[in-house]
Every structure is written in structure tokens, then in C-alpha cells.
Image (cartoon, rainbow, N blue to C red; front, side, top):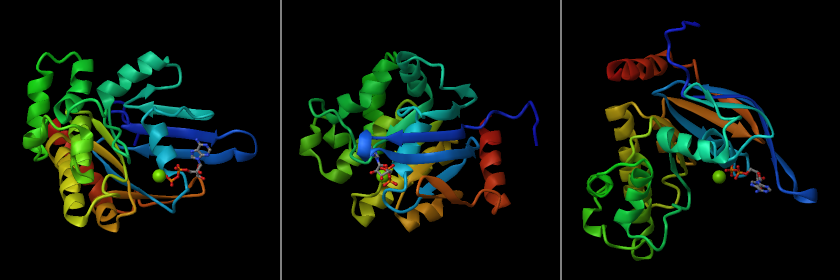
Length: 249
Ligand code: ADP
Ligand code: MG
């Protein structure tokens, strides 16, 4: 189908190729990747360690530029954007949860969550950040610094920070990877609540079969290529994603 009235895909990678490292350590990480993710889809990126999942996620999020090929987010080609324009674009479109949280150590939990809201010029940044912390069950930890929080609590702060500006797309790198099962379940529920309530497109790198099973689509990465993609295998899941977006439009 190629109906001009359809919204552009949330993410579209065409011929994306990327090598990282220098000299003998140079690795051909992503090899001519084509993938399209519909707005409202929930996608699990799975595959062996070292296969290129994190790099693929960083390319999708516009944090890593490919050597070749094109990345489009919500119909915008990221290639010509300057670093500043790209950062602003990311701020409006993409929430990112890093594997190692990437919280700012000198800021409290509340301040960390408020950062993207302040960057977006939101006058109510701190009130909003406080509500987001409440939503992840950490209202009572607002004035704590990252070092005073457990791994699971830090991950919940990172999720609150990523979701606070209500990005249409959320990418997360092994969001439950370092957590015990119960805490991992809480994080999963938070991410899927954003999908359910706001139609947020989710792209999640994971080793967790339970998390992958909750995704409407699973993409397997192997040695820098897409070895398998469940897209189209489950028309019901694709239709559900479209319906979720339609209901929100
Ligand atoms: P995954 O997330 O699937 O474990 P990554 O995307 O982190 O895989 O890495 C894929 C491959 O690229 C690995 O072989 C890794 O060692 C290599 N790699 C990643 N980042 C760099 C880098 N900055 N310099 C050199 N090699 C890198
Ligand atoms: Mg990784």
C-alpha cells in the first residue's frame, strides 16, 4: 500500500552501513540494513552479544551516523541535519534509555528527569518531572542522587526521564538487563503503558524472552545483518498497531 494519506513510518533505515574502530580494530558492525518500523509498533531487537543490536539502536536514535545509507525518523531524513539540529530533533521525537542508565551523577533524580523538559522549554519542567517520578514509584526518591539509588531505581529514573517529554518513539537498550525479575517486570510495564496510553513506538534491545514475547514484532540481528524479521507474520499485531495509532489520531 502506498497511500499518500498514511503517516510516514516512525523509523526507516535504507542501506545503512557502519564500521567502528580504527586500524586493525575496525569492525564492520552494520551491513546494508533495510528496515521500516510503523508508528505504534512494539519491536524487540534480539541476537547474540556483539551482533550489532546496540549500534543499530544508536543509529535509529540518531546518536550514531551511518557511513552509508539513510535514516529517516517520522519522515525526516537525518543525514543533512547539523549536530545541533539533530539534537533538537531527537529531543522532540525520541526518548532513549541506555543500558547503563547515563544519569547525571551530580543531579538529583528529580533534576535528571527535568533535564529534557527544561531543554524543551517547558515552564512546568519540575512539576512534570515530579509527576513522572511518582508514576515510576519513585516520588520518595526525588532528592536522591544516582549513587544513592539501586540499579533498578536508577533504571526507573532513566525511564521516567525518557518518557517525560512524551516522545512518539522510545528506544531502550536492554532496559531489564541488569535488574531482578520483579524490577524488570515493573520497567516493562512502564514501557508498554506508554505504548498503550500514548501509542508510543517502542524499539527494545533485549535478551529477555519474556520482554521479546510482549513485542508485536521481533527482529533478529546476527553479524550486522537482519537474520530474521517477524514483520508480516502476524497481521493481527500489525493491525493492532495501526488501530492504536488511529485511535489516538
Ligand atoms: P550488541 O549490542 O549486539 O552486543 P554492539 O552493537 O555493541 O553489539 O557491537 C557490535 C560489534 O561492534 C561488536 O563486535 C563490538 O565489539 C563492535 N563495536 C561496537 N562499538 C565499537 C567501537 N566504538 N569501536 C570498535 N568496535 C566497536
Ligand atoms: Mg548491546
